[in-house]
Length: 219
Image (cartoon, rainbow, N blue to C red; front, side, top):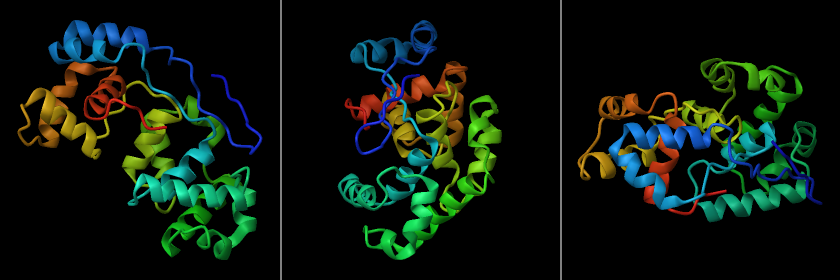
C-alpha cells in the first residue's frame, strides 16, 4: 500500500485496489443475484483505504454525530493546531486549544484519551495488521468514544479487512432493505441471513450496498 505525505504532513488515501477486490467481486456476482446486478453498475470504483491509524481514529471521533460539513470545519481547524495529527501534538495542544477547534468537551476528552492510548502504547497499532478482527476491536473499544461501529469502520477503511459486517451501520441495513426486501424493515437477524452468502467478502458486499444508496464514496 502506497502512502504519501503532503506538505501539511497528513497521510493521503491509499488508492490501490485492495488485493482481494477482483476475486471478491467475481465470487459475489457468481453467488448472489442482487450483487450480480449491483456490482457492474459501479465499474472500476473500489474501497479506498485511509493511511495512518491515529489520524483515521481521530477523524472518526471528530465526525461523530455531526454533519459532514461541521466535521470538516472542525478537522481543518485541528490541522492548524496539530499539522501532523500525532499523539504527541494532540497532547501538547491540550484541552483548551482542542475545544477552540469546535470540538465538544466530550470529544476533546475522547481525542486526548485516544492520543494517550497511542503514546503510552496501550494499544498495539504496529501489530494490528497481523491481529484477528475481533482482537483489534477489543483493543479499540477500550478507548473512550470508540464503540464497535467505529472499530469496524477502522477495520474496513484502515486495515482493509475483507470480511467485516457492521450490523450497527444504518447504511448497511438500509441497503439490505432496499435491495433484498423491497424496502421492508430489516432486522439484524435478516441482515445476518443475507450476509451468510457473502462470506468471506462481507466488506465488499457492504461497500456495494453503500454505493447503491450513495454512488459517490466518501473520503
